[in-house]
Image (tube, rainbow, N blue to C red; front, side, top):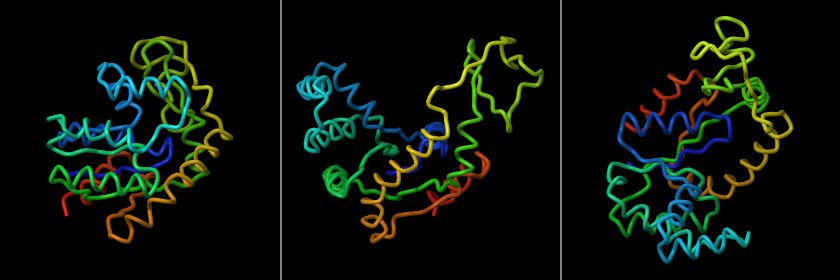
Length: 215
């Protein structure tokens, strides 16, 4: 099973990918993780990637395809892959089809977690974490049992991510729409796109995704 999981920051994409890894043995493959792993490996492709990343230049599609191909050849991807952050253009989508086909695989589903922008802003802006253990909380949805005291470690120090503000979230939403717009028609023409309510309870989203994968 090979799928693309789409959704703007804060839609719960990471949470659902982690559950698919746990429940189905799939592997989440993100472009950032792939590039960092390639650089760390010291391979020829990794050295090329390192030079491009350090120079700040645009990362060419052909080199990204090579990095992705190497990742797909690793044995842990045999039970399925969740593509995160790739493809973002139709050219990359065509390249992904070729990479999978060359390995006797295919793309099975493109699942988009659909969110309400105003509700997503409220979800993201209200979240904060324990500064000591990292436990997550929210102003409206998940307050500590004892106000100001972490349920897990008892710390009274909390923090918020500096980019968890309304302006940044709306900018990310606009960027997401701009990046996904080119590839959705390509996959919709092949009847691969399914949409799930990303604003539903986490468990409900998990069940909805499972229903799509088990068809």
